[in-house]
Length: 183
Ligand code: 5GP
Image 1 (spheres, rainbow, N blue to C red):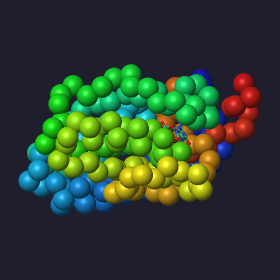
Image 2 (cartoon, rainbow, N blue to C red):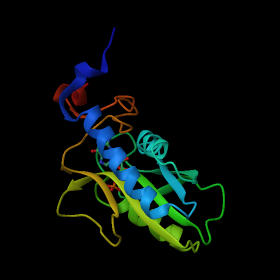
Image 3 (cartoon, helix red, strand yellow):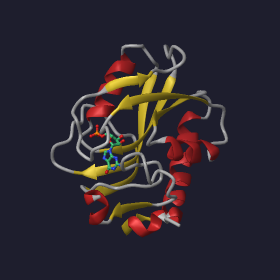
Image 4 (cartoon, rainbow, N blue to C red):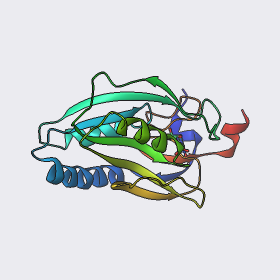
């Protein structure tokens, strides 16, 4: 039987570390959005696990919606092209929005999404990113209001993040063994 764990070279962030941080972020969000009925946007598919965990910890009225954009395709390099694959279900005019994203790498995806959403006249937009890569070339025309962890510039999988659509179901975040890429 194949175990996903066997393909992992190093665990970057354990399940416990992630869950502790998720709770802290949820507390901060609750504080700020207590009476605002925020619209929490999940950027599919990578942010799905993070979003579900975070809203479970938020004991305030809120609504959710999903958006899907193309990012890396099946390689591990940024294509530089952002395409909307699934848009939000409802108008967002006047709403307080929280965009939940898995990882900020080049920043291209979020930059595009945020510019697009501002055109729809929401009351506010804040960004909650689980991981922010430490790198020099990063688009930052926007604030990252809530960051889970800063990570070194390396390709990571798990907790929603994939390689060729796999490894999303790992409850932790790790780095793949080199031989996984050569297969
Ligand atoms: P960006 O547009 O900021 O370069 O990256 C956007 C998307 O690329 C992220 O939302 C994520 O889906 C994917 N991505 C970026 N870095 C990584 C990574 O290290 N691992 C995985 N699995 N996906 C990544």
